[in-house]
Image 1 (cartoon, helix red, strand yellow):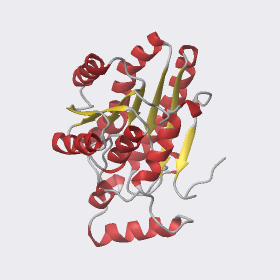
Image 2: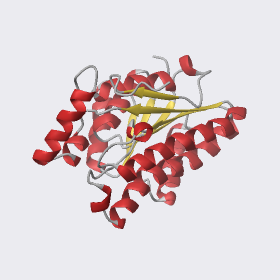
Image 3: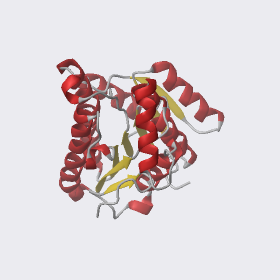
Length: 253
């Protein structure tokens, strides 16, 4: 149990990769706050953790609203004390050619995938810098490293998370706060199935699978394993780094 009794916040922890992250951090001994706009799913994740004897709470919050973010962090702090680990996982996408997309979609994608993590980093980062410790881990995507057809604005946001996190890592290093990024490749989640539905979507998934050297989609638990590493003392001297967990889909140096 590498992070026993540490306080962790995971956004978008109600399902998919987020749920796997919550379960893994709890298995490592952390107290886990599941912050999600999907309240029922967040409660289900908390229940799964509680059944193992570990500690969790579910908090309904819209990460695009800064005041709701502040309130959720305040609730966690009042319940358990200051935040040790922040995992920015919540995300959303709509897969379509850029020229077929509209401003409403762009704004939603940007608000959730870029502004949401920025909101949380601003609130939790201030707390961590005062304490002189903390781990911030943001889930980006290999789409942010190399692009992805049908995900132009999403890719822009995920690239933005990488640049933002590298800068934040430099700024917070003096306070002994680690900031790192994980870039999943295609991962078998409900969101992937949702955004790539229909015959065309199945062809896209097939093409992505063939592009992965291991010839399969990733599993949420495999992303969670990387998060557990960055959250632990094993990564105390690691900051500003981008780890691709994609079965070798991208291998840039």
